[in-house]
Length: 99
Image (cartoon, rainbow, N blue to C red):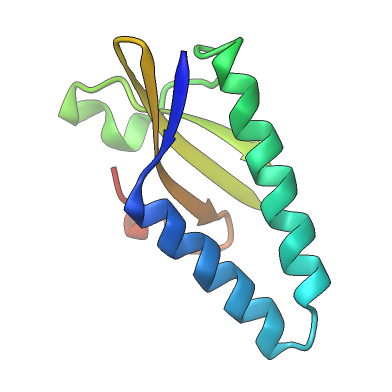
């Protein structure tokens, strides 16, 4: 299976980096990104490891999630592709997550 990172997730990575850079902690941002990317790559071997994301169940696309540190990784499986659709800090309002 192939993990595909959507444009939204690329934007989230930039936002995470900028947030920690504003706090003068760019090395923390890099570490967070690396840990999230490593966790996402486990999906290549174990795509159904994450539980169903109930918030998106009405879409019928089978969204799932993984948690890495304080971040929730939202993804869905479509054939041989795994689309990472959002990375979401768990302290935020869950209604801000994007499918």
